[in-house]
Amino acid sequence: MRTKLIYFALLVLILGSVIGTVLIKADNPKNITKKEAMFYTKLDNKRVLCELCPRHCVIEPGKRGFCRNRENQNGTLYSIVYNQPCSIGIEPIEKAPFYHFLPGEMRLTIATAGCNQRCKYCQNWQISQKSVEELDNYYKTPQDIVKEAQDQNLKIICFTYSEPTVFYEYMYDIAVLARQVGIKTAVVSGGYINPEPLKELCKVVDAIKIDLKGFNEDFYQDVCGTHLQPVLDACKIVKNSGVHFEIVNLVVPTLNDDSSMIKAMCYWIKDSLGTNIPLHFTRFYPQYKLQNLPPTPVSTLENAVQIARRVGLNYVYIGNVAGHEFDNTYCPNCHKLLIKRQGYTISENNIVNGKCKFCGTKIYGVFSL
Image 1 (cartoon, helix red, strand yellow):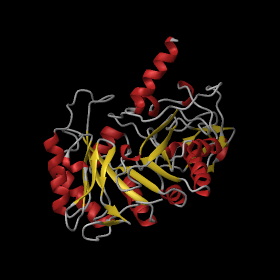
Image 2 (spheres, one colour):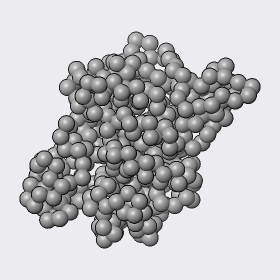
Image 3 (tube, one colour):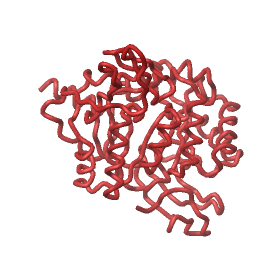
Image 4 (tube, one colour):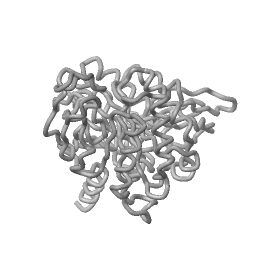
């Protein structure tokens, strides 16, 4: 009983304000399955080169890559988290956050162990910084996941919480099956993925949110353990693919909150992606290895929104500050309120057929199934 209570408390911490129920766990959660990985090259002496993300791990036989999820077994690279989600839940799509993708709909959320970044402020480090053996997992095939969404009458499956890149094959197969039955799929990612896998993913999913963690290479190296340029390249690929796209920037006091950095990021978004991609400035709360820093002052977030608007971005939001006026959507033309949010709940929606009800301006997004 004590073990079950501890596990339940861990799930609550990971999932936050989950609406709905966590699904029933498998009888044998430690059973590890595998599927041959996509995007790798066989080398000499049974070594392999993983080509999924910019780390380009060269993996010796019997070893795993940096993400902990891809294992070289006798010269063949396998995903060892296939069919092994550690978290399944039901939540509003707004929590992703997606504000312009089927607002008001609920999503089935999926995550596995592992990540290819090492963010010091990770809010889900209990799963992202673990290997599959360290967690209790479900056994759910892609068919099981799609059926669960159907049984729950959910129109969206969302890959989130850890890093979907590192369970690529599982995500890809679920997305293909989901599309066949009319279920949309959404990806919440750090964007640290190579171009070819990302282009293939964009062919089968419907929405992608990338966490653009900062606009400085030093920040990416020191705080996230990765590099900025591959994430910028990923943003361009998603935008050019036609998949619905939104960006989040978690504003961390003293690390990436400099006004000049935020301004440079906003100009890059405008020049490289256009003015319509929704940008969410979210409030940092002390987590994981950055518990010495204070929460982001609301005034800092408000300043970031004003910078983005002066640059010319049309849809800019403040996240993790419940009830703030900048949590709402406004028409970029007539400036009237389009979507009013109370936390993750929509209390008013004035978008009709993808347009502002008041002036007829087309609003970027996906507003109907």
